[in-house]
Amino acid sequence: MHYLSFLLKRFFPVVTLTLSVVVLSACGTKEELKPFIAPVYPVAPEEPRFIYERSLMGSADVRELTSEEKFKAMATGVATGEKSLIKPFDVAVRKGRIYVTDTVGRMVVLFDIKGKRFVEFGHRGPNVLLKPVGITVAPSGDVFVVDLTDKSIHVYDKDGRFLRKFGSAEELSRPVDVAVSNDGRYAYVVDTGGVLSAFHRVVKYDAKTGEVLQIIGERSPLLGGFNFPMTIAIDSKDRIYVLDSGNFRVQRFNSEGEFDLTFGKVGTRFGQFSRPKGIAVGPNDNVYVMDASFANFQIFNDKGELLMFIGQRGADNEPGVFSLPAGIDVDEDGRIYAVDQFFSKIEVFRPYGMKQGDGYAGVAPAKE
Image 1 (cartoon, helix red, strand yellow):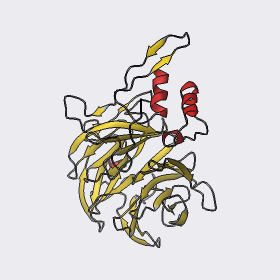
Image 2 (cartoon, helix red, strand yellow):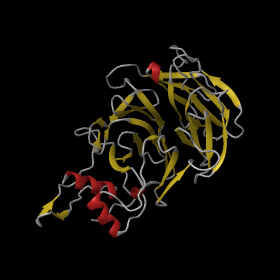
Image 3 (cartoon, one colour):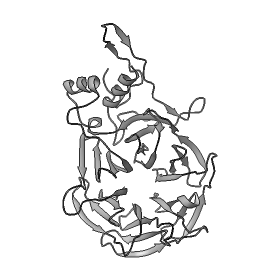
Image 4 (cartoon, helix red, strand yellow):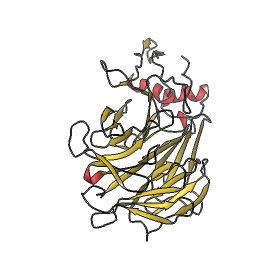
């Protein structure tokens, strides 16, 4: 019955807090499943701030299924024509469109919530992606994707049509992530370098022409320096947050690339980092840091003060459970999207006071 409960949550992904389903067992008797109660964070007696909403794993999570397909999904665990994520790495969200890089599928997957579409792109044509990693969506809606193997940044329109690319092996050593300024003029690319490389830095590009404009940082343990920087995010004031993973800290720079603030250090206590992997900034400029070792993400304010954390490690694919977390993003409405590579899923958490149907990614609750 545990597996059936999982399937119901999988193919009817929008949470109904009092869900109760009666099914026939093999011997013809009726058995009632326990109601699924969505986890809230933080746990009682603390005031709840976020609630688990849904998991995105494949086309069945956004595409409308027929009654026959739903029955087959519950009976066999396979939906007709379903496509699934293989090994997602990073996520970027804008106005209900959720873009996910898949390193094994060598593509970008679009979950279009309102349009009920599942679209794959970047894996066909003359400019195919070899190993897509970091991703962001510009204010214009254009999608910027880092190709680690090709050492370039591919740019697509909001529907996945290729527009252009920039960057090269002469300019980048191991590019891993990208962020775009609020006016869309600049693209900041994280170059994580390597053990013997000095290219531990951020490269600032003209987002339209691909011209290199500035190099921010160098390999160093000092403030303003980096050691294996991993991911990058920009807040509403164009302040640049870089997850400096090898130095176990977050560093912030102003729009001119000047060092401004740092927080975090190595450790296992709250507010510390062990294996920091992803970073995002929400609409209120809170900072979200995913840690692959802790299997959770911590939320800080823009002063670097810890507010709370969400998630835990587990061997079973359950809500709020991670095994190999990676990228993270927050949309305009405050919904959080967290990637887990092992379970091949995107976990979605919404602000506790928000209804399921509210916002760009809102969906009406499932009917019982």
